[in-house]
Length: 59
Image: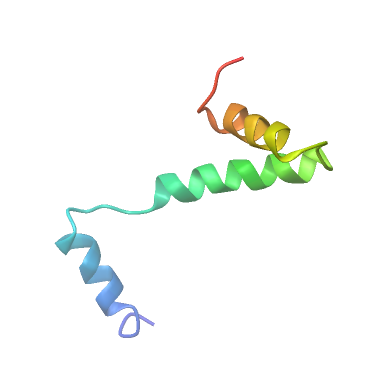
């Protein structure tokens, strides 16, 4: 309800209208590619693949 979320709604205006939307979008991209990957040989390959998918790395 609105009363329950009142503090969170007001915090949006007191923090310069910032949100975590960008972070959530990148997290969604990473989760999507993680499901499609079905495993990697090692953690380095996984990290590089997620950076490539999320736009933090170019081939």
